[in-house]
Length: 149
Image (cartoon, rainbow, N blue to C red; front, side, top):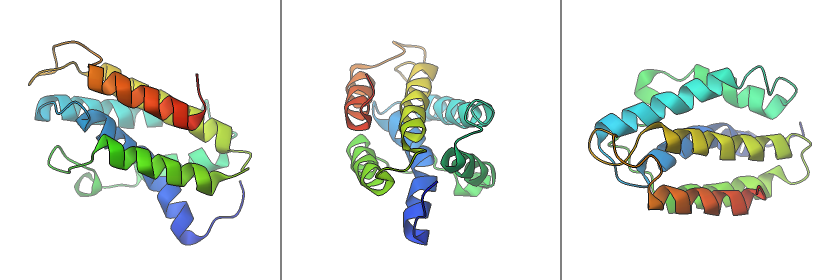
């Protein structure tokens, strides 16, 4: 992992959490769906520790996320727009530069957003269409930014 300033590292560590919230809120579902998607994203991060064990940057992200208290996690009342998250992704990609951990980090972000988007469907209780048109557009924009097909 390349050397980052404290501010850059904080942005890199926080992005996966904000990506979960932004993906969950892009289609303006209700609190039940948001909670399901937040939980799915956090569980996906826990499960990714082993497959990404060689990626130091992601291991730092996983440790950061696992140390967050419930009060530090976003809620359905935390307004995170998909556009704001995509702007943050653009910033992160510029920070990553040529970090050897960058490709894995980018691939993880896309996989994380896909997992969150697939967790709950549209509607108040998340039982509708699994991937809304808003989520599909968000995922496509994220993939393009990350250079993932």
